[in-house]
Image (cartoon, rainbow, N blue to C red; front, side, top):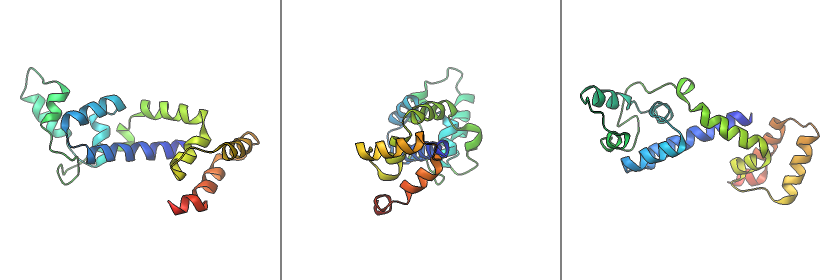
Length: 156
């Protein structure tokens, strides 16, 4: 359950970056820092812009740097700007990034659930309550559902 939440958040984060970053070099920098490749970006945004790079590289024996290639993109990265067949998320999702985020999340499951559903970090009482339930063997999906359906989460 937590892995699916982290994956959904990562995909949403990639999609948001592709749709809101308006400077191509800034997008290249964000992708590099986030560990996200072109195929994952294409899969998350639904924009089939990989072909842009393939055509550029075929005609350029000296190969531009990634920043130069990104400078020629039309932003935002949307299906409207780049219609076609985007990359498949299951095949091209950035698993190394997901694994790092999942490792961190497993160290602090309660914080991840609070951040995801309540948009904040847990207070001391909430943390103690849910950590006690987790160590007592309560399934994480029950806790996720409880937080997701809480009054505070519904008001967000």
